[in-house]
Length: 196
Image (cartoon, rainbow, N blue to C red; front, side, top):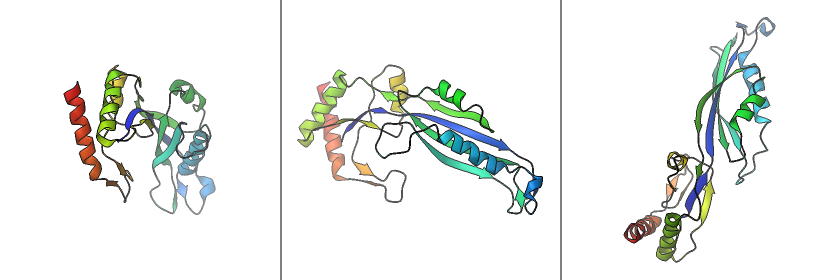
């Protein structure tokens, strides 16, 4: 039942590597596109800090990769999509300029803003007080690493937060929602609406 007032933005890049097909038994006759792709990804990944859990640094994750048609053929094409989550210190144009010399084609698939709110906004503080009244616990204003549609509101200057019941394991096999926290969420939102 914390209130997310800030989260990272999204930059998805598609990396496209072209090579030269050859028989797998004679790889010296070809140019392996998957090898080129892996080298390029490693060069891009080296621009980021080592990933440390629960830090606000920009991060990179290789989310999709495809290439090759058969085990016995040197692939002449491969592509991957990387998921970059950025913070307020990240400069997209400077970053793209820094990686322009890697030996693959780079396409920006998605670039989305951060969620960013003024923590002293009267509505955010009101929601915080409503949660604290309903739960008798301190309600934290926090930063999150994932992204929500709230980012599109804050980009236009409209305060928006992510708030709701407690859960863990997002997108994993053990994803769950604490059913008891639904009541606190409902009562907090009801109190907020009646107080506006």
